[in-house]
Image 1 (cartoon, rainbow, N blue to C red):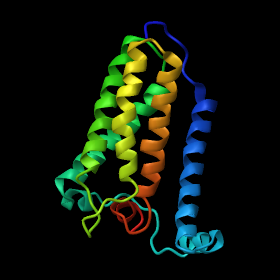
Image 2 (cartoon, one colour):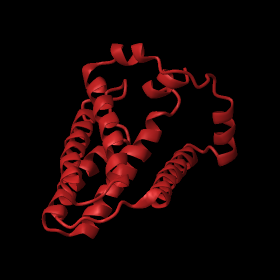
Image 3 (cartoon, one colour):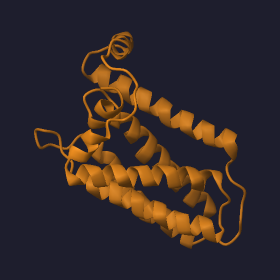
Image 4 (cartoon, rainbow, N blue to C red):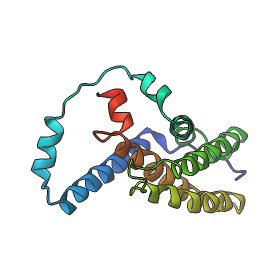
Length: 184
């Protein structure tokens, strides 16, 4: 992608963030519905959750298995680089370099997540995001190499929203490590 184009702009970026969070809420409501819990009961449960927002307890992450620490590092890198990519100029050398960093971070996050299991040894629905990421990442890179800017942008933005925002929001559900680090 040799031709430079302006960034998506703060308004489009905020709309992308809003869509990602809205989808996360819908998924939480759908999961509740599957278990026979209505939206009011879900909201009530979230309002009555013990805990409060505080500085992260990083010692919990330090005690976590290596695959979780690697996953959190990769996701954190992908999130920071992803925001810079979405707000910066497209098509220049910096975008391409940061893009490769982002692709490697996303692939590392997806692959490392395959080694993270529930306590019963099973996969969770979040592993679907990892599978999709491993399929869509090469598609986005291929689209960029073929100068299909529109497909590249849609694929990578979709991975940012689905793989980072939606799956990331699910990582902060009560009982999970990220919830314990920030709210527990």
